[in-house]
Every structure is written in C-alpha cells, then in structure tokens.
Length: 132
Image (tube, rainbow, N blue to C red; front, side):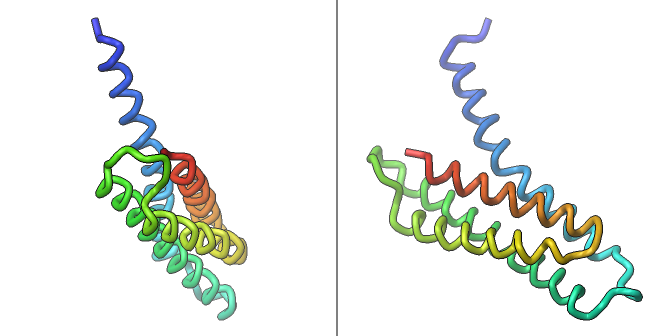
C-alpha cells in the first residue's frame, strides 16, 4: 500500500511533468510538420509567418525553461518567485501571445501544432505565476 506522502510525491511529479511536456511535444510536432510541408504553392508572406511562429515558439520554450530552472535554483521558501524567473515569465508570456497571433497565419498542420504549443506555453506561464 502506498503511503499518503508517496502518493503526494507521485501526483506532484505528474503535474510537474504534465505541464512541461505538452508545449515541448506540440513544438516538436510543429517542427516536424513545418519541415515536411509543401511550400511550392505557398505565398512568401505565409512562409515567413510560419518561420516567425516557429522561432517565437522556440524562444518562448527557452524562456519557460529558464524560468523553471531559476525557480529550482533558488529553493528557499519564500512568498515570491525569484526576480529572474518573474522577468523571463513575463517576457515569455508576451512572446507566446505574439507567437499565438502569428501562428494563425501558418499553413494547415503546422498552424494547429503552433497554436497548440503557444496555448500550452501560455498555460505553463500561468502555472509558473501561480507557483509559490
């Protein structure tokens, strides 16, 4: 039989990795679908917005990773997040919002994957803001 503390630790890890995994997986899907897309009939502005959305989503993922690393680097118990984590979270949320807007102009499957990744990133930044 599992003890309550073990169950609590397991749930904590599921929530922790469950909030980080969807943006990364959907970004991988976006990269794969972007690389396999047919660009022959695609207008240049649409191709440029796809590249911009991929880059912005990647930058947002890097900022989320930096924010999470900063939280774990300073494990002292306090009511506030580390300053670097707050700044990277705010900038990352702004980048994810811009990526969401730009990704709406992408083509078919890359559009779906990029929108999903941007939405998951926004959710991740929201959860980082709620963390103690």
